[in-house]
Length: 191
Image 1 (spheres, rainbow, N blue to C red):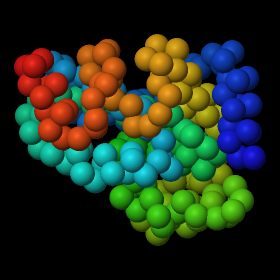
Image 2 (image 1 turned 90 degrees about the vertical axis):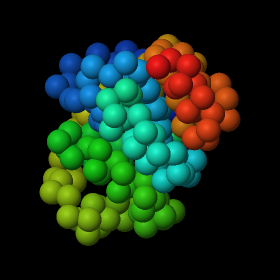
Image 3 (image 1 turned 180 degrees about the vertical axis):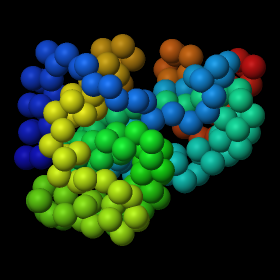
């Protein structure tokens, strides 16, 4: 049922005109030679694994050296992911920290049988982690919701994204199995 509501939101979102002054959640230098776009859903366990197993090495070897920047784009697969994305996007100065915390502790807040339960777990988690977020204001912010949904719409239209995580390197979809070794091979060819 939750997926049905998300599909309706996305369907009607095709006409969304987003004018939000919202910033991308980015790691790395703006003028990096290589840009990676990561389409992710905050409830996706494979996305959490990317943040735990691949991103730290990618950050150390390529992002911190100035060769790569990564843009995290929203591709919510359900209402819980949509709401978590809105929370991360709402605090653009802390967006990356919130994103990382949500992925590293995914099992602490992604639980419950109703949207209300999951939202309550998300609210408690954000508070426990010490993020200063006006939860209700962020969840109900239409501009941020439009921004998040537009990421998803653009991912489908421009890159044919149909699963998470989907990695785009310099506007080309990464088609290999997502592990650090394969990612590194692709990046080395571009350096």
